[in-house]
Amino acid sequence: MTNLTVKSRISLNPSPFSIKDYIVPFKRIDFLLTSFGNVCFAFGSFVPITYLVVQAVSIGIDRRFAQYLVAIVNGSSTVGRLGAGVLVDVYGPFNAWIALTYPAGILILSLWIPATNDASIIAFASLFGICFGAYAAIQPALVAQITPIADIGICTGLYFAVSSFSQLVSGPIAGHTLEASGGSYLEMKIMAGFLCLAGATSVLGAKLYATGYKPMAKF
Image 1: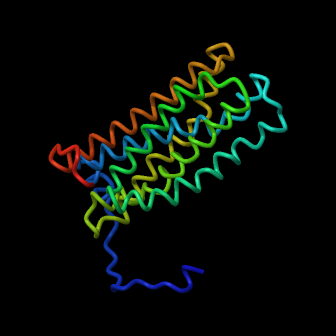
Image 2: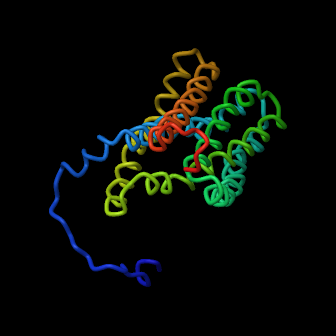
Image 3: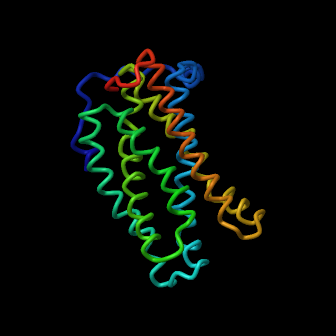
């Protein structure tokens, strides 16, 4: 419906294809750090989404209940998606993204690892879902914040393209980690948690670089 009812407010001016256009954005430190942070966080955050159910069953959670855990993550992500818009308006997209992705990594390490019963698993799924929803909603605003308007299209495409590979391999690599650890989920959870923290830290670095190392700046 959108494609049928919306048109560009400016005239189209197609430019010839050039591979250079796909390389130049990564020469900008802020874009490079932001993209790398997204790659790390995407990898880490998709581990719980992929393995939350099977891990819950492995510790004795009822199978019929466990199958709803991903639905809980997705349902609670609505809160994160809606609330993220308010936070972005008040504090800026980078500040909001950083403030909600660090807790995702902390939740994996401090709540998912020791979770052994229904209550703790539900708490993790709900809280992690809020963080994940905010992460997903704010991403385009990160690119727009640091990109000239004429380059937003190609930079947004590059940003999501590079992270798509980490999302693709997240499950298989986590599964290999699980197999290599003899069926223990601990190593896999630690990997996921620290990758989320690494992603948030990389985006924090991008923010500091773009603002002239002003940690309290609205950005």
